[in-house]
Length: 396
Image 1: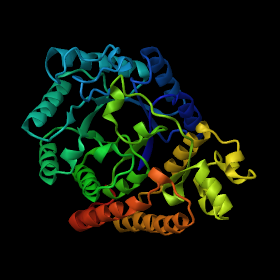
Image 2 (image 1 turned 120 degrees about the horizontal axis):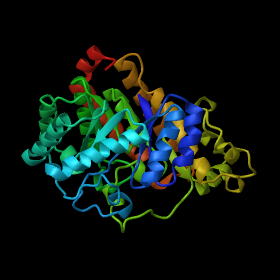
Image 3 (image 1 turned 180 degrees about the vertical axis):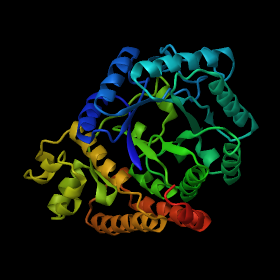
Image 4 (image 1 turned 90 degrees about the vertical axis):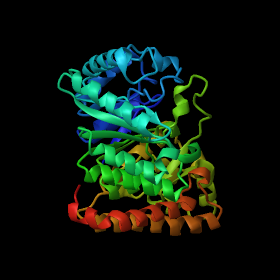
């Protein structure tokens, strides 16, 4: 499994630094909401020169209600809210040219955000596939967007309907976008997670490449479904899909600086680290050297964490460096080893987080402790339903 950088606000320098560090081991998924045409066509080739693959998320999910001028001002933005007809074909032609100009070798095809997976939505997806097949993609391989609401994903019948139809569509790659329940950063629904794993595993067993967009570390469990890549970035709205970010009045919330403890699968404000220091357990939160990140070292060297030279830039780069290592180590040689590893990671974090919580050290809304049970439930469901066939087919 690979980590792709999901672009959001102010990510260009982070991508430069991390791509130089990682070499030919990642891709960047550019955001036209956060980059102008000039920036896209300059920055894309720059990233290609650094060895990264460049992709573009066109972000045409709900064109009828999307009004963020940074997005709608791009030449490819459709003139009508429909995913068919002359307007869509013109939009697709413009997207092809934009992807060529940024140096992309593959093109992410827009997809309608599914409130429900029903006959109307399926017809739209089929129309998109038809138009793409009729277009000249200039040698680029298409990656089709499948974007689902929480209501669609949590409905077992709708998930199976989608999987049944995928078997009929002549597609090879999917950019899977899954909106979280209630818009939360961390997912507190066992059913949502179970269906996410089931859908991803079904896609992989069907021979598709699966790239899952807008992910946090909680989605490391997707390794058990054999997905090819997850995408993540700096702000919360690029780690959890937020349709509201494409509406002009819904811009960035108040900033805070966080520290990611990857072995605990949780993030902490600096005040929480001060509490850990006072309680003499700060060392338990220190990132192991195996993650290859020095960005947060000052937090554990300074007289106390809040006196350290540690800022937003360090926070973001530390998170992404650690997540990259976790992602690359998540898929093991067998299905059973991969499953056992995920459970072991969750069990270890659960034990440590409970002990830290008892000492007043909490990651608040970014502490995974209360969510671990949902991840374990989802793994158990997938193992019972698809474990045997995943074992036989592994690696997917």
